[in-house]
Image (cartoon, rainbow, N blue to C red; front, side):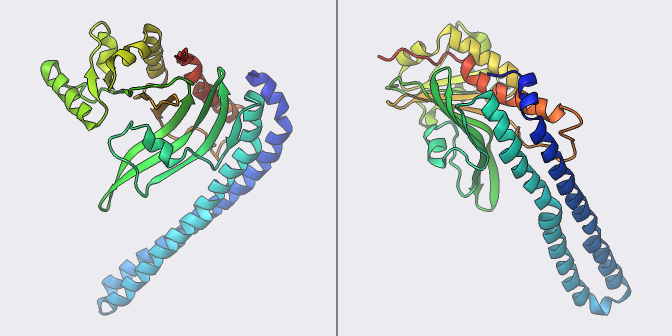
Length: 320
């Protein structure tokens, strides 16, 4: 994997060309932002008109609705659209090049993402996304000789008219070429605020969601503090959860400073990993990419961190 200094030299001409696009899109976005004042001022005029000429209140209400519609249209098409165009241009031109230099054999599709059926197969979340599943930044290739694919995912679950954020972050699928005859899940310990027997009862109740029985590792109290383990095969689970595996998961949790989800299942041998985090590969249109290396450094570090997840975990199981 190339170092950042090498990549900077390779992409120098591309950065300058993209900087010109950035400035153009930024100007369009700023102009769009200024246009937002037009419907806002008109709306204020409507409120004043209703106060001074209340006999025409319904006329002003109609105008208020038109002002609101105009504001939404200007926001989406004149302010937000140039930013989205810049994101697409950045990813298709510069980020593609960075990925190729960083991992030449890695496929990268900016608009692609993990299929919803694969997300559901993981069984990592209590609900399934319905009409609220999107993503971006799809990667597929090999890391440490293991076939892997991952992307950013934003999954929502709708309960009536209310949308519940199910998951937002990096979702990873690793083919470890080892059949799992049971199912083993490592989930954040959501009962961490409770103590003693009450805490254990909560863990057991969570296990009733189809993930098997609770597996408690008495010899690893620090791990138990942050995670709950469920499995349909205790013997297989203990073979998977070696000292090295547990230590690696704890290190990754500290690295990301966030919850960490994993499941080992399927006779074909798949490991599913979910790391909640905000979008990591969206450039800031207000930051230059030619005058300083802030954005480039951030992208490099974030991509390297994603690859580090697989390198850190001992997933090269011996097939049996």
